[in-house]
Length: 114
Image (cartoon, rainbow, N blue to C red):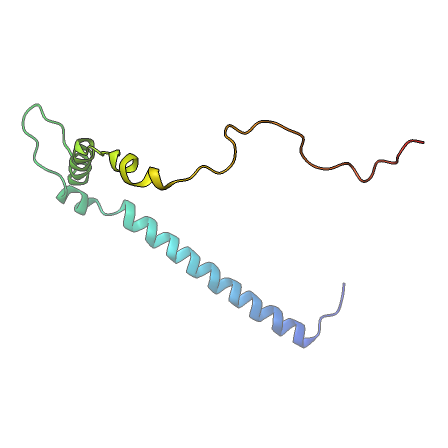
């Protein structure tokens, strides 16, 4: 067992204190982030709507998501402007379709046979 000097002991104490502070801060951040997400039961009830007979209980967030999905389904995109304005300016470079040919160069590590 090696003998530790006073400087090494002080250094280890400082590192231990720093590690403890980091662990404590990480624990507090995780604890309060989980607590806020799962413990807000009263706020979740405030977002609920009163269902009519035969209706499901739908959260306000779900209602907004449903409305957004309906709006997105109604959008009709017309891509004719690509054919009319953009595609005529594009140029073809090279021969299409590309045909398979010989690629690369000769292997420089092969010893020539004599």
